[in-house]
Amino acid sequence: MIRRNRQPDTVYLALIEARGIVKIGVTSNIGTRLRQIAWAQRVPAAEVVPIGIYSGSRLTERRIHARFAHLRIEGEWFRYTDEIYQFMERLDAGLEHHMYGRPL
Image (cartoon, rainbow, N blue to C red; front, side, top):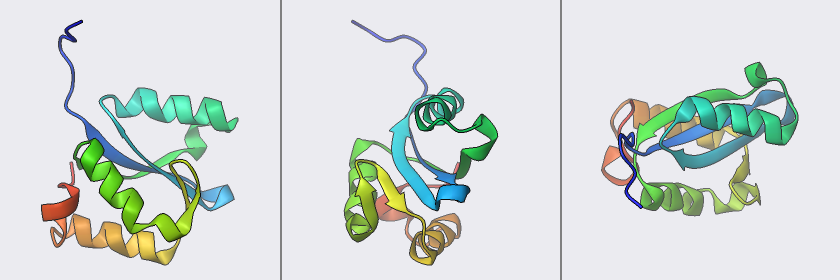
C-alpha cells in the first residue's frame, strides 16, 4: 500500500511534567500523536507538552533512546532530567544535529 501525502517523520520529546517523564518517539503527525499519548496516559491533552521536535527518523529515535538508556523507565518513556534538558539545548543550538536531527 502506498501512503500518499505523508508528512516527513519527526522525532519528538513529549513531557508529562507532573510525572517527571518524557516520551521519546517518532511520528509523521505530531498533533495526533500528542493527543494519543494523552489518551493512553489518561491525562488532559494540555499536560502532554512537546518540549522537542526535530527532523529525524526511526534511526534518530533509536540513537536518542540508546543515549538515555540509563534513564529509561519502560519502552519509549524516560525520566526527565537535566541531562535530557541540556541535550535538547545543544540540539537547539545546532551543536549535535549531525547525529540527532535538526530542530523544526
